[in-house]
Length: 211
Image (cartoon, rainbow, N blue to C red; front, side, top):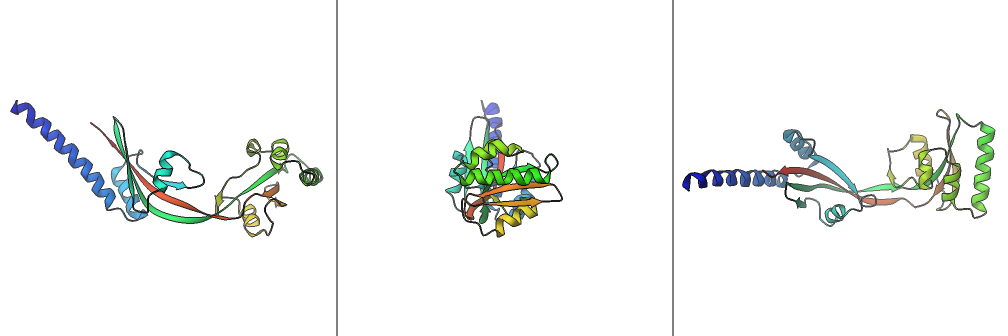
């Protein structure tokens, strides 16, 4: 009985030490640099650094993480693994949101684009929903979403498109045009929201497998 008991106790103590080791390592993380260093040392694709955006991520996991303060942690456990989440950094980033109709200058002439944009703006002024117009006229995949671009922060879009949106003085529900001549991209843009400071958290995820 003693011969059998010793290996079991040894395995339990190793497992306990491993759990405490991961927990203590995560407790010591206070910066993104330390988090990246830990990921390199663990050397597993399962472990990663994730950015959660409060407006984009609405899962139950995201809601639990957003309820915690910076430095807080969460453990999600099942029969085969224990997943550790550590909130390393919290910030508020200015985001912008518009809807658009894209017209491809490689497929349409300048006169066709000008006429189509005037027609679109006229229909919108007469009360036709922009979402309907985007689904009908926009020449990219975002047409399926009614042209809604979703929330985005500075540095995520083409500089001309982005600068026009950020510096434009339009009011919500106003239309305006954006031209990116070197790409032959032409847009009718609807301002749908005022800029918003959105909470983002950078979360370290570490997966611990059970033996």
